Amino acid sequence: MVCIPSGVTGVEERAVRQAAIQAGAKEAHLIEEPLAAALGAGLDISQPSGTMVVDIGGGTTEVAVISLAGIVYCNSVRIAGDRIDEAIIQYIKRKYNLLVGERTAEMVKISIGSAYPLTNEEEMSIEIKGRDLVGGIPKTLEISSKDIREAIVEPVNAIVDSVRIALEKTPPELAADIVDKGIVLSGGGALLKNLDLLIKEVTRLPVIVADNPLTAVVEGAGRVLDEMKLLKDIAAKF
Ligand SMILES: Nc1ncnc2c1ncn2[C@@H]1O[C@H](COP(=O)(O)OP(=O)(O)OP(=O)(O)O)[C@@H](O)[C@H]1O
Ligand SMILES: [Mg+2]
Image 1 (cartoon, rainbow, N blue to C red):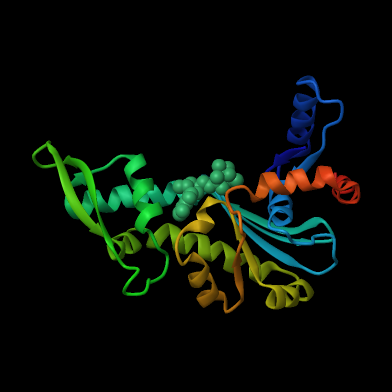
Image 2 (cartoon, rainbow, N blue to C red):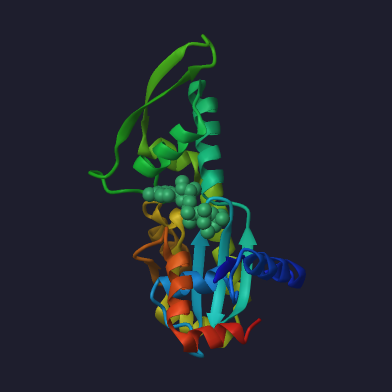
């Protein structure tokens, strides 16, 4: 079972299938990542009702509306975790004349990053190390969660926008289902603190973070292999 981004071409699909067969698989099945993410999050995708899954990875954010084990609508933007790290680097450089690396930026994001204001007890600061752009020597600096929220506003808003656009494009019947069932967030980016709250605030819909955002896709793919009926439903789409 190989996960593929939704929206790949028929030629690309065949190439993936052939690669799996050439690698020694007797049979090769494909599944689009948003479907796998939904299954991995424990959703029942074979129902005729609509489900929205937002998968925020490192390179891309994919928003998909799923019904009857197929993707009804999907959009993909190249703004996700990596762009958030990049925004942190740029902000620290601009505001504090300090150059930090990608690893530091990601660490800062994971430890104090947030998409929406935290409670007073949750707001905090950490020390980061980098190279001072004026003196050229290593320097330590204290940076706050509020600073980081300001730093990542742009990429975070772009992610929220892609959700809003998807909602606008969703057929009305399925949109009504999403009002009831809410939006499911998966991918490592779903772990950014309070991203669920921000999306909830903007869309006024319930937002649920998958229990296992980092592994939902691979777990969903595994579930398909375990359940023959699901496999047939998914295979019918290819
Ligand atoms: N606790 C956390 N808070 C915020 N971001 C996180 C957290 N944990 C991981 N991430 C981010 O999640 C991203 C990786 O997520 P994931 O593993 O879902 O991506 P991927 O599937 O490899 O990428 P893509 O789907 O774009 O190909 C990285 O940008 C990482 O920094
Ligand atoms: Mg991914």
